[in-house]
Length: 294
Image 1 (cartoon, one colour):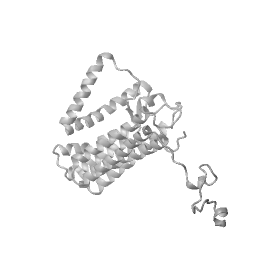
Image 2: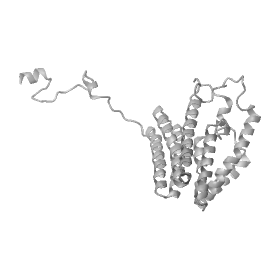
Image 3: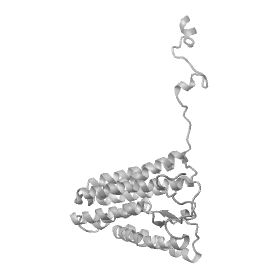
Image 4: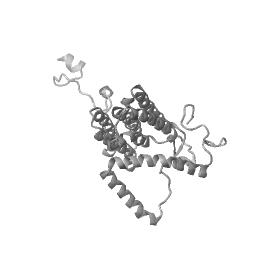
């Protein structure tokens, strides 16, 4: 009893020592938990749901349920595209969320579309189809890495608020699935289509890592008052056709996006000069490639 009372710090025969909340032994119990506002969790939850949707699309593809697989990949791309905007709207941006978003991007815009497309048609091209899928995934990863480097730079070129360098990864995921849209409309996924799809996949991978200026739609330009209603009606019409004629609309969307790429590059050239940047530009060589300095 004497040893217990004096040597162990217990009182009244209690065998468990008691610690003061802020005593010297408080650190031994690890970091203290604190409450986190719900608004900080919502954007990360959207990111996690996007990853789940992308990986579920891969599973559905290998089960032969290709329509649902494409739908899940597109849903993943949509969720991955809004999580950052939701975070900024709710003032819930964080370094943790940024890292989560980067990891989700490579899954939803790189791995998931490539595997879904491989399960549908690229496997008909055997090893060439798998090589094309690998090239696309690597290109998507390189594109995302370059985007992260350029977005973190303190001093940015004037054109960066209006244009991307290369096709953005979300658009690449939408474009690379074009053979699937055609297949779901009735085109037979045979070996010939597999070889053509492999070549097309490599082309999209090249567009991702290219230095082609692509209009981002983030400019601060205002919309003329007389165009507001026509734009709203166009969006309603697009959504209605997407719901009623899904794959036809996706084919037209992908083909239309590819068609306007040269026009966007031409507009950049008229406004900012030749591409790549002029030799005397302060941003020469800082295009998000290895060797750039922040």
